[in-house]
Image (cartoon, rainbow, N blue to C red):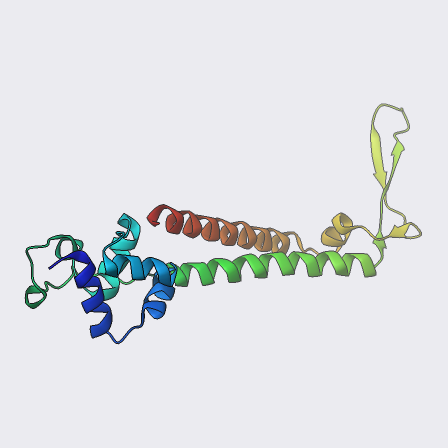
Length: 177
């Protein structure tokens, strides 16, 4: 049995239209029609997707000597856990980003003491002087005054870890295609 006949038979046995199969594979309906008529063949990536979708091996699809009554089961597929990693990465990145944004916005509304630099009495170094009359809006001094350094550090680490997870999973998916 030819590849074109096998694709048609497997599609019909699953109760799928050409359009539904095309949607599942991310190709046009016309591509599926050409595969089934034998005027074109699926590329390696689409062949792999077909074998996974129909639960058969790629060897079965390509071997014209194997008939439909001899359909071998595909090798067991390990469940893909990337979706969990994508969700975790997205949540971590969003939490880190929005946490830092909220702290920044709070620093714009709350005035804190801002030191000013003056020369030491011997004019050899700069010294910081704190004066309660000198206030302003500063993210840096807001974080220092309210002891938020560890929170900002943790939020930043969450942001970085989340972005790394997202980029890594996207890179893995891209390499599989």
